[in-house]
Image (tube, rainbow, N blue to C red; front, side, top):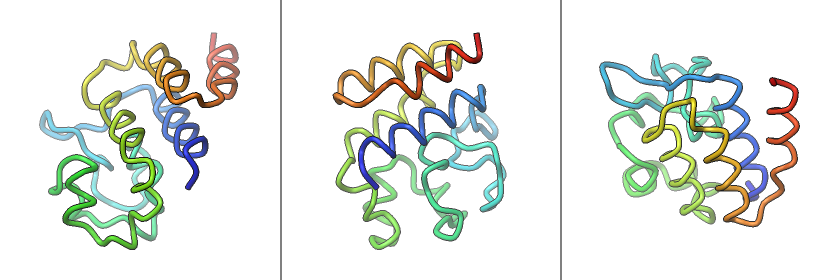
Length: 125
């Protein structure tokens, strides 16, 4: 997956969802640990349904997934580990009310096209 596609899919998912994927105070890739769960963090949104495994919920951060998960599953994340980690941090460390500005700043920081995010935000205003 290219950086632009990763950014757009993760960022737009978070903005459309508008809330965190959390269970008992802990962030989750997918809230109910099923492949079809619609409530996901930014990284849970980019992991293909057929590659998702509920065991991922016990592996922690993206770095943990890459260390302990199936390397073939995450080959599309590895080239963009810093961006992936930053997207995860937006979900895990900030309230949804701050996501739009942070996601735009993240796109600018990585020299990505933020126009899809801006269009979504204008449509929602």
